[in-house]
Image (tube, rainbow, N blue to C red; front, side):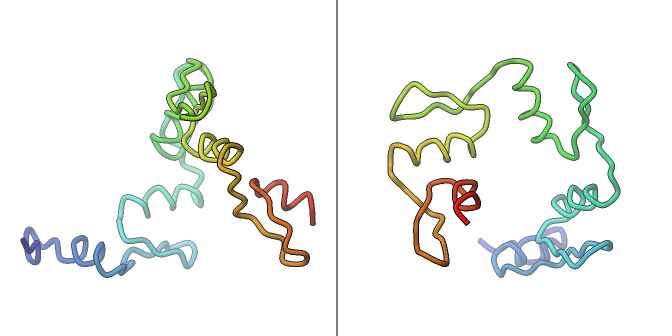
Length: 126
């Protein structure tokens, strides 16, 4: 099935499949495939934070950041470790935790080749 020409969607369809980043930030050299991602990025320059927490004064640049923040108030931890009973508020926190079980050490010192499971451990080593 071809989407070429459907509602003049050439940019979004072909940009997705070719890697073309046709949306450029007016404040820096960053480029994006989707206008929605550019819109959120621009807020890092303008300081606009349209999403407000209903529990406190925190405001965020995008809805997903607000959802993660609200979990601090609700205690929700939807990401569960398959190896133990640990639960986390974010997928990234779970990913970092799982390295304890798998032994994965993706961060390597360029000076001595020591490997670490956490970026912060590598930075502390150097």
